[in-house]
Amino acid sequence: MKKLCLLAFIAFIAFPVFAQSQKGSIYLNNGTIVKGKFSFSNDLKKLKVESEGNIWVFDANEVDSISYGKVHPTNKNDVQNVSSIFFRTEMGVLIGNSENSQSSPFSLTGSLNYSVTPNFSVGGGLGVEFLKESYMPVFINLEYKLRNSYSTPYLFLKGGYQIALEESREVYYSNYQPWSSSFWPGPDYSQNNMDTKGGFLINPGIGYQRMFSSGFGMSFAFGYQFHRLHYSGDNDYGLDIDYNRLTIKLGIIFN
Image 1: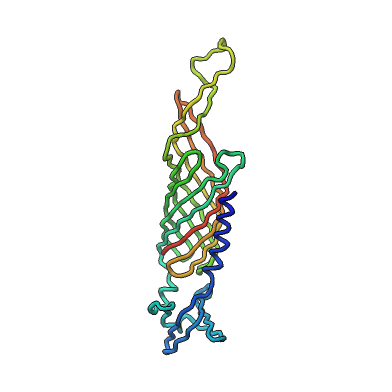
Image 2: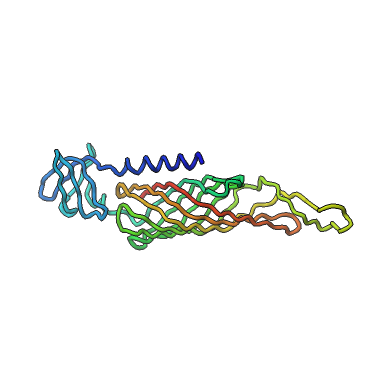
């Protein structure tokens, strides 16, 4: 619960701060320079500038370049055009049953993605998740943005495999013993230190992303993650454990 509260607090603080207008100088094609706070519309077709109590709205094609404070002018295309290749790193929690020994494991993943169309992208990634043991999820990532703009909701689907990074720290019990018989008194129990084999995962969900420039943005996502982890023991004994989790993740996007 502490991790969840901290994550929600970071998201609540970060989004309003980055969404504020930026200060700079706007260089128009006709030679005019307007200084003040500026921001692009979600469709990137309009630029609003607040200067000395006045509000100016320009079409994007009227702008030659923009400078931020003491930074040299930047061509408007650098602000508008987002690369077709982007990297998203996410951290969050996998919330499950409060009675589980790992009720909210920590998750950290990163994926490299390619925009097939302005709205649809495919990619692959890996990370680390701390369940009963530590695992490395390796997955394929599909994303669909509902709008082709700097600010948009999006749908995602991740599928892949959990690779075990360490041996099991749990002791599991089985009531099977090949040498037992009905003449032996009482139930038969044996304890096994099982070998971790990993298992498949699937994670659909919905998120919201905000690009603050052509090269940097943030996202916040909710999803459902299912993964089945397999353990093997002696005498061909096997055990499958299913995890059903609500995922809450905060992401950073780089182009």
